[in-house]
Length: 188
Length: 161
Image (cartoon, rainbow over all chains, first blue to last red; front, top):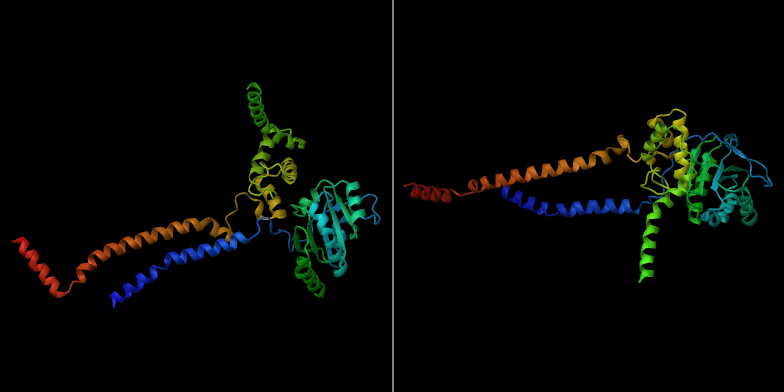
């Protein structure tokens, strides 16, 4: 009886290294496939920070962006961009598509940019923004937890940050994440 | 020959200059007038992680954002905040991710206690294995059949006499 037990035990202990390896391998597989550049936002489900940014001088719709502009009762999208940011250039057509397809107003937070460059960027690539606030010092960006442009936030009508997309928008992100998210948030 | 030597010397001098160049990038910040407060700013900055060059503190990083964040630290310290208050300010905006040393909390127990737990598991395994080995030694005696025991006794007796 005990002999049989010890035989079974010996057979099982043989698999212990394999089990440890499998555990380690799966932990590494998951860990290494995460993107360390994507830092989850601390501001999800929090109210938008207090800020009041001046308008982009010389832009047609001459309106800045402030906390009050994000308490309209309707959903809003805030896109952090800059003319010096190459991915923003790539993202811009997709931002226009997001604005057109969702029907949700998109506001721009122009991050640490020169006004003339920012205007030239919009003149060249088109201007999907309802309002543009100029954050020349980058201070409002810090309050928004911005650490790299572009970043795109979805804001509820009550001024709560619902979602943050880090990095340039992609077709896949718009179709599979942002549009469904906006549709669901609108339904509520 | 001499020109080669000149080139080597020149390259070496160039290397010596590198650190000063690195410093030159960061000069457009204004350190606080009070050296004690500026020291505090540096100490706090060392505990905050740079979001762009990850795994560097904002004190070590030369990225624009790190520079901006150092200025925010200066502003908070000048306003009378202590280190914990400045860190809380940053955590509010960027999450616990910005702390070089994550706080011990329910979410980080595995991180902090995991290695200790692994050591304990290892110690436990060693103790169990040693015990079993010692037990195996005595089990050989127990596993002897009556016949073997009688033989062993006879042999021992024979030796004794």
